[in-house]
Length: 290
Image (cartoon, rainbow, N blue to C red; front, side, top):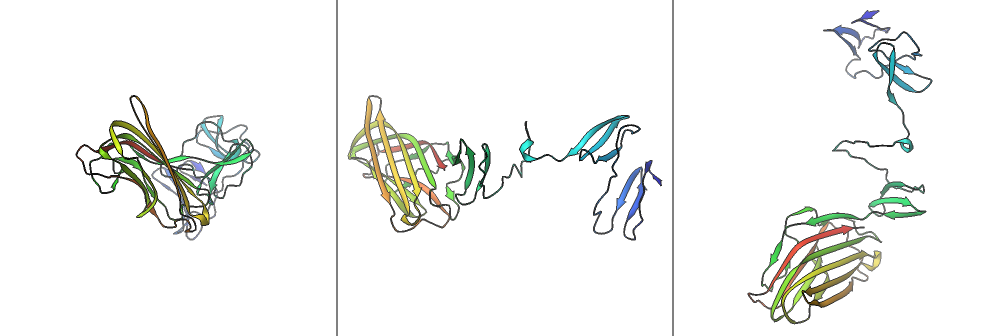
């Protein structure tokens, strides 16, 4: 039967059928829609016309004709291992990798649901990716106060709030801060690392006067299963003439287990003396997970 200029053969169903509406061929299948549309196998070696669509069973592909006598591949099944070149995925969906990655082929990558990270296999070894989960790029100034004050309140991208059950054994977080400080009146500065409301690491500078200096702080926090979390902090201070201090401290919440609730990682500074000249400026900060 010819409908809308297209030759079709069909069995009329009570709940559906084929009809021509304003120059279009409409296939209906009742309230549930069309379950399937079968396109017959055609060799497409000759005698086809622009607008034809057929299924090439020999090569397991669909072919569409745009110019009379010239066919082109429309859709083909491609194994993941053969995909090459630039591929674009939707902004909302992105590329979703398989979970519980156990691959042992070089170049393999997938989700490791145990370590809650992306894993890859290269050079005969499985490894995990390091990623930045928070980056603060606006200055934070902490004036002379004896009240612990957060250094991570500036404008940022990402988050410092960790999801529940993030602390699996072997998981690491690293906080890096960069800035300057002035300590007058023979005072000192205390740096506390907190997870939620709990202080998990503390470092205090020696008492003295620092007229103007730059500092970097690196804080490594490692999950150790039943042994809790292990915190290692390094505080490096120097001015234009040389290194003034390199401080480090280690703490371990031995026996208390790892946190299981969703909380924020934070770093707080406290001046020992409330003096108008005391100030700490944090220029940038990052939190990395690996």
